[in-house]
Length: 271
Image 1: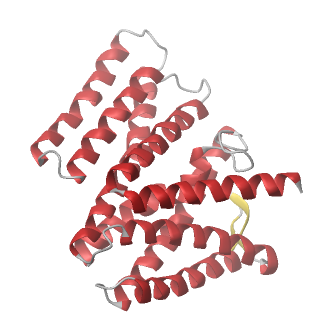
Image 2: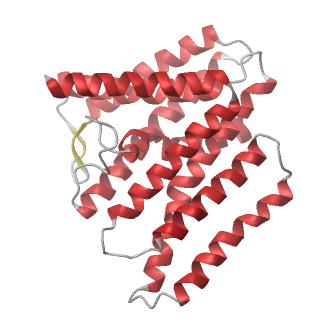
């Protein structure tokens, strides 16, 4: 019971903080996403626990640099040519490894670069999703707020449906508790939420919102499975303990990491 209330309080604070930051201003949302990116990357690097030895300080600093640069472009503070500077931290990682005299230098480099691709890039893309809504209605935050609502609904209802009716394992090798019933429960409730978002936000068709909900539900599930694969690979229960009752930041944002690039591609090239 104590764990339940702990999870409930943490969950309410997490949702309230995220919604407030998104609704308030794109800059406050960008700061919140940046904090999430930094903490998630740190957890990711720590998960390897000796199997590789990336330069953690330089990796985190480089991650911040990459996030800030992409976010400034997303918020229209800098022009696209500045994105060429993204190569600087990657070059620095390679050069720094020359002077570290580690046994597996390319494994260390690979771990850091994967953290940029797996963690930093998806958090950065959230700012582009935010900006996409500006040209469609008075609610510039509609698509990014909808994104998190759909991730939460899919995650929660998949868990509840699986708990009540789960029989057939979805991916037992990676996540023994996930079921097909849970997946379809989360998916269908996400579609229902997508229709609700169509009613609330003007400017986009019902088909757009249903497609949006389907993309989020599918790729958020894959994101959850990928993080489960990471934890199973290194035999850890949670990615961290920064969120009481919920584990680490990666545990909370796992669905976001694959869903945000998929949603961005959906909005940019299909819609």
